[in-house]
Image 1 (tube, rainbow, N blue to C red):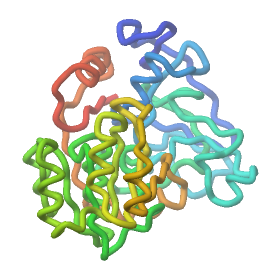
Image 2 (image 1 turned 180 degrees about the vertical axis):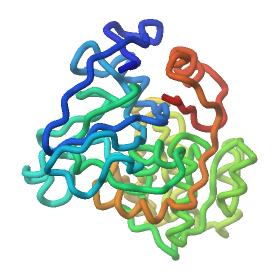
Image 3 (image 1 turned 45 degrees about the vertical axis):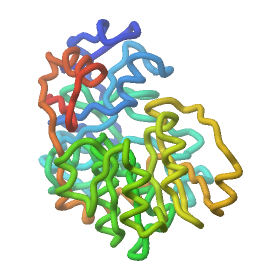
Image 4 (image 1 turned 30 degrees about the vertical axis):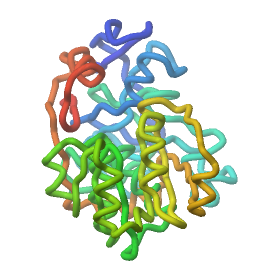
Length: 327
């Protein structure tokens, strides 16, 4: 099979080459990968995260069509179009037994600690795939970009009484956080400079006037939930935007992970900070129904042979939407 592979760090060392296919065990399936997206974790895998094995195939978000089925796999068949849960888990540890597969003690991230989806095919445990008729762009965003904000919003209990402010609302996860919070019944204020987000949020405000505008829009009450996947650069802004008894939920640090915290401002508002990470299998199953009409802003499609260019644009370009790689 053809696959995107690296052995040395950096985008310049990515290459498409022939790579040996893996045999399918009785509890596994072979997928023909159709479309993959680029997520920040993919760039980190290429540049800095410890990965295994080497040579390594990155790719943490993708979907495929079943090509081969192990004899113990009965819930999908050859030809099925499937969503993929890209966190490998043993199903027997204490975390798995309570339905928290993200924290499996023997778990691995597909595309980081195991081979990923930037390849013509991938062999993966049958329990990690689910038949789905969602759009290919949603399926290729589901494993991280959709599941992560959904898990975060569920963790803090977003509902009809909430005003949710989403920082980075036009980003990889932000646009899905906006849409999912709306589906949970919340009023959503998106913070972004991108005008097109108005299609999805109740209100859109830009960063320079965010505090003033959120105060005006909420009659001074501010947000009950602030979603911050950006980290350091907008940490202080998030603390200003959260209201009394509100919650700041964070699941990323794209602008930096080390922040300073004025605890006086935190306790004065009786506010909480909640960290979350990806999501579990049950939530992914919920999303197969909830995500049916999710919209995906596409910046550009690339081919596997154009992967270097795709990653350079992801890292340095002024992209507006998600970047996909057609396999």
